[in-house]
Length: 105
Image 1: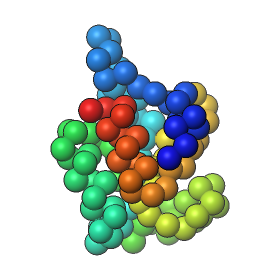
Image 2: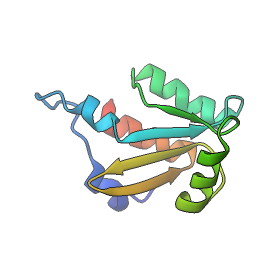
Image 3: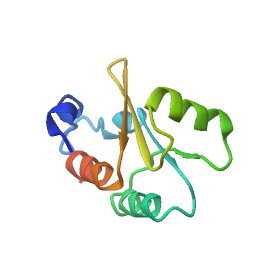
């Protein structure tokens, strides 16, 4: 992953103000239930006790279109990151896992 792209999104897990939950509000995971790569990301979310909203691509044609149009790719998993008035779309399960561990572990 190009860490310089995501550096401005760095979240401090030791934040005494407890802003982690607020930062989670800007995240959502686009996934498919039976996708092994999505399962891998969801397992890390469970391990880290992260309550990130899931967007099921099998059940939501409108969000599938948004993923393709705004995200640029029609593939899952994809972590949508809305922060500071900007939206980033992070693909690749290993990159998503690295981001979650770096910011929330």
